[in-house]
Amino acid sequence: MGKDQRRFDPALGGTLSRRALVQRATGGAAALAAVGAAGAQPRAARSAQNTDLSGKLTIWGWEAAIASLQTVDSAFQQAYPNITLEYVQKDTGDVYQQIQLAASAGSGFPDISVIEDSHLAQFAPLGVLADLTDRVAPYIDKVNDYKWTQAQVDGRTYAMPWDSGPVAVFYRRDLFQQLGLDPATIATWEDYYAAATRVKAELGASMMHLAKARGESRTFEMLLWQQGLGYVDAEGTVILDTEPRVQQTLEYLGRFWQEGLAADTESWTDAWYQEMANGNVVTIPGAVWMGTFLKSFIAPEAAGQWGVFPLPVWTPEGSRSSNDGGSALGIFETSEQRDAAWAYVEFHLGREDSQLTMYRETDLFPSLETTYTDPMFQEPDPYFADQPVRALFAETVATVPQAGIYTVDYQEMNSLLTAEVQRFALGEQDAQQTLKAAADAIRERTRRA
Image 1: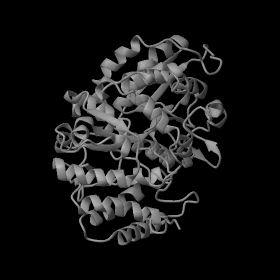
Image 2 (image 1 turned 90 degrees about the vertical axis):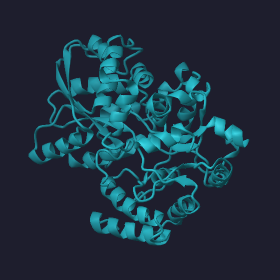
Image 3 (image 1 turned 30 degrees about the horizontal axis):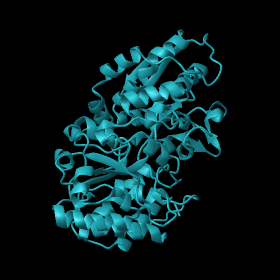
């Protein structure tokens, strides 16, 4: 499967994108918009508000993103009564296709668009996004540091980060207890592997999902990101076949395929959901948004049976953090209402109240770190046996390393790597051959060193 709009943040289920899944999880745009009608009042504006700003802003996005933004529109319209908003809902792939078509034509852009981090690096260098460097300056130290990477080109910034995708391990408490297994003892990935052998031997279950022929590279990417690795290094040089830790990571996953410790089930299918719901799969290394899906439609009846623990480490001093997904808002260079557009972006993404409202109502984890001191993050979560999981993810996201994953060539690189990893999973080639083939294909296609 080509890595198009349905691939990242996260993947699709059948014809459902992650945005459709979020919409399914949150109960529909109309309900979220209704929440916005009674939205929170501003705690404090981040810059002096010019309430005389006027104009009509056109905003592109997919259904779930628009629904989330609309939860604070009532408060925005109170602060800026002369600015009207027109949302144009598109499938995620259509958003990117339309931006590309507008770039070719030199016209046809909206004022603002939602853009996933996995695609942002593709558009930032094209000259179609407005330079926001001076406007975002007050937020540079208030937003997750790694989130700025995709938004910047040659030291200039072209988007404002919105949500992040910190990763941890979701696990079945009841099944761990049945094994007498304490998640606190899974400190390293070797500990995780040892637990997987027990899960198979004593429960007849799988430790995680890891499909073969219809697999994707999501888990592999997350484990690389955790180590500050990726497709390329900081200079843009392909490292898949030159960095030993990349091969070691793939060989680690290979043990799960070779020993039958992972379920060979395609992601985002009914069978995949059922294996999590019925306990046939006992852990999910995944991003914060997975909690939303578990609660809402994958396993809503399993309240109290799930918990979360940080990623195991690769080395004693290694990171316990990674990322999967995330998005931003960009203003287009052709907009004739950039001040009004920035007022919208800043109000929605730069205010703690706005970000907290969107997080509470639509579960999009804020990149704005000043929200993490809010008492909301310490609230017990009944679904996770009253574990304060928001606090865990707030701690985790603070140490997500920089990694060469979401680059200008990400879509191509991911597609080429995935095809080779599938062959490895099926036993058709070893890890070294896999990474050499993927790296050579990427170098040829992208003209990278």
